[in-house]
View 1 (cartoon, rainbow, N blue to C red):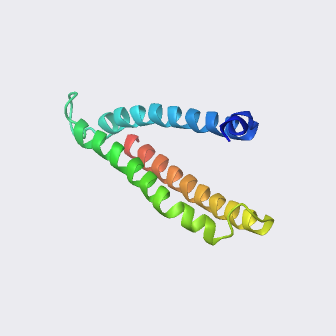
View 2 (cartoon, one colour; view 1 turned 90 degrees about the horizontal axis):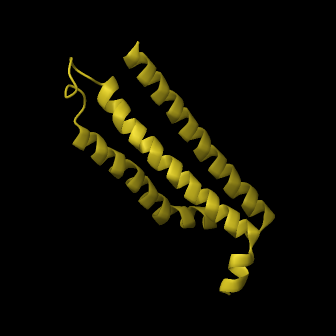
View 3 (cartoon, one colour; view 1 turned 60 degrees about the vertical axis):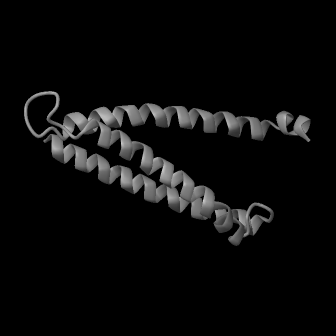
Length: 120
């Protein structure tokens, strides 16, 4: 029941780390809004960059859409690979999640290169 869930250290640590990750993601989102307004400036002056409303809207849609896609597709995908109930299922599932992380890291590198190219 609820007592055993709240006493499960793995669950509690996972919950705390997910909350910390979301907090960090929110702070990065703020920095990216500022970055896109300043780096993609089209002329002198504070209002010459990308429209703040557009940047903020995209900053809400992209993570929200990704989260919704993960909620809709994730359980079906994980269960299709065997889930976490058997050791081979765990290996297949974690392998897929690792590949997702590699794709995200590659996207981050491309984004960094794009910003660097724009600044220089």
